[in-house]
Image (cartoon, rainbow over all chains, first blue to last red; front, side, top):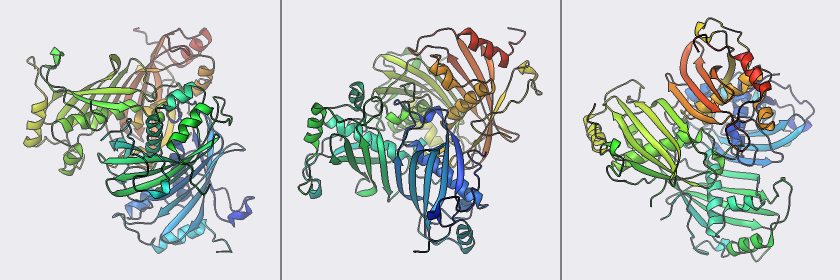
Length: 159
Length: 159
Length: 159
Length: 159
């Protein structure tokens, strides 16, 4: 089992036919005490941080590092965030973030996530990212990076 | 002008006809250094925390405190979060969160938010909250609280 | 009364003879739900963030902004942090951070803080900051900034 | 090598004679983007959160879980925090937190930490914890837990 910050290739199309063979990465996170709130459960603002770990691991699975992209002047700031919270997580639990690309172009990438605790679905989420340069302006992803994205994402037949 | 944690009644229908006379509260927030990230801008996970300040102030405007609701066994955990990020905020800037109820029933309340810096729209967001007891199970809001919600929210004519 | 992100000049030597006439600034903070933890109280990692708000307001009281210092290439990264936690704070409470300079030179500044809730002392803290350039290397503070620091800090007679 | 949330027994007295045979646990942490700030480095308030992960792993090494202690009504709130920051950490780096008990009694436990990135020392820290019941009042640790602490800490000869 791999852990937070390491990620794991889950193989293509492991029983999720709607993924059309796209890669899904796995991130294991130990819930921090600081992430809980006075309700005794993980505060909802912790989830976007977990999703970000999921994205980092997804790129790592593709042999990439987001830090390296930034060093090359390619940024992917968040433009839109959508999270559904189904079941709470608690201190010291191990939760699994599964990350995949739902949609992609050279200018915009949408990630989709499932946050699980074993077989229990805690949350699902999507994030939309615009590709920009260091100046924050939209620009297309370089060909080399786009080819790498394509190795982890298979465009659905109906698109 | 009032500040973070104090809130301010903006009056009914101040030029936003789609609000149908509903109340909108105002929260002024000074951006914290800890809220910025290596891109030099406010990290996206700070926004849900700001929205929560907006909700607290909205209830305060109605003469309520969410802490008081919890003490009475009425909780409103977050079930869904949607945020659009339009322009970045930076350290030490003053940002305004405007909060209103978009939809409400005794069992579910949807808040809508605009995050502004002066005339610049930084973000808009919605959060959906299920009303529960201390045990986390869905339950209808007590009549007294529901009447208070109705003072801050006018059901649109088409609903 | 002023609030978080605004600060307030408390005047010189208001009953604290050991301050030798140095200025103390005031920051009022509304406790955020996200700052609480599963013990039902504010998590200890929230306090360093509050102290940082205190420092920002202290400089603001002197007519300065730390954002402006950074824009001039003067940074004050934290070298050392010491916090004593005496009483817990809870969601929605108003807490007061009082900030003053305890010791200063052109290369190093030590701030001291009291965190209060009314008359109850919640915490006291000190932070030590080394003055650096954008490159992170130690450098002396420019004369103009040093003179400003001296308006808010009176060197104790025994030093 | 084990990772964050898992911990690792480093064996007794591995070249640190001043530890007098006490256990030191290891926690590996991947730096999160959300932990960075506008200086491009990890914000100082992230370190107390990392130390807390170190404590959790230290207890895990002893076959304990702090969540389990709380369920038994034994709490160890933080009374004092001291951190020295020597070198910055950056996004996506792997940092190591080494945790040990520096001093202990049935009523008070002091942990000491080194935060490293490979051979580079980033920070060292201590935290002092008072043993309390769920009511927050000081109480001595139960014998069973105290015996477990003693397996991970050897009282120095000069004490």
